Amino acid sequence: MSQSALFLAGEILKRAKEQNIGISNMSLQKLLFIANGLYLAKKGKPLFNEPIEVWPYGPVIKSVYHEFKEYGNTDIKKIPIAYTMNLDKEFDATANEAINFALQVAQNLNAIQLSNWTHLPESPWANARNNNDDYISNESIAEYFQRFIEQQEQL
Image 1: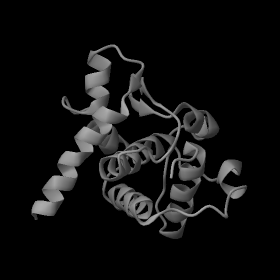
Image 2: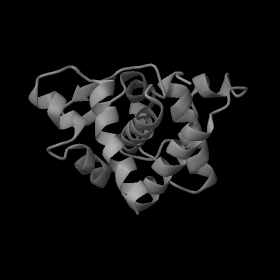
Image 3: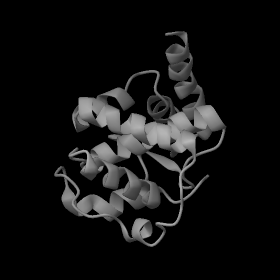
């Protein structure tokens, strides 16, 4: 199911607009991280094909950051061309579930709260930063999100 992070960003932005949810670049980075993490934990492979970098303010997908950096901390107003050129692509049920969950999170947490969550001491970003890694491994993301899936199944 792996595709470009910009395509997935486009899908998140489209659905957010339909639900009247404002998404900043920082929020989008965190939502991509969440959707990818859930997908990795369930499917064992990433939802998008770009690496997640360890930046000072959290996990970042570089191509997405640069596509939307002009918006600063304001809501993104455009859908990336990478999305509009691939509208024939479909998401599997697990990807749809991960995207929908990320959007539910976006309704309840602002960009700062999302950032704080990704900075928790046991998070994949914090572990990678402590190890001076440039990227967050898919293995550490899958392991981290597997805990949330197990907790949800126990409810």
